[in-house]
Length: 209
Image (cartoon, rainbow, N blue to C red; front, side, top):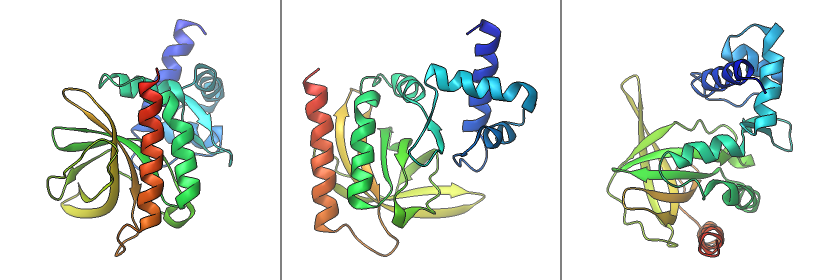
């Protein structure tokens, strides 16, 4: 890929991830429209992003952030080794629970949302790029903890119930695997067991490297 093509592809991806709706797009045309770039060059840039691993398609054909994008984002927190091995575990967790499963980074009591998979029961979940905590959680590696996240949009505070399990840490950051809980429902034993098992898989994979 030439420097010019790479630069334009990065511009496309940057425009996409900063789109107001944060929604995945199923076709190249959807990506191009979301980014607001000419279709004459947009298809080449979408192909370039796929080739470089910044975009990928899930089994349904929907575009999501690729492993290169995820690894780059986590590397900014000093945790780039987590991304490539966690993606299949994240997908299996979503399939086992049919809830939105996600990987995120906690730093300074803010939760920065990473890659996620949308389960059948939470298909309409609109995840935000970052959240605060309703109260200070007691997060320990491998131990699921039910907690409430807070987000604010145009002076409206929204609360989202989650189940979190830390899988790795540095001096400044904590990587957590999580599930979005149904409104008005707490975490069931099945959800807790599934999350605990998935978090242990990631922790063990990291320790084996």
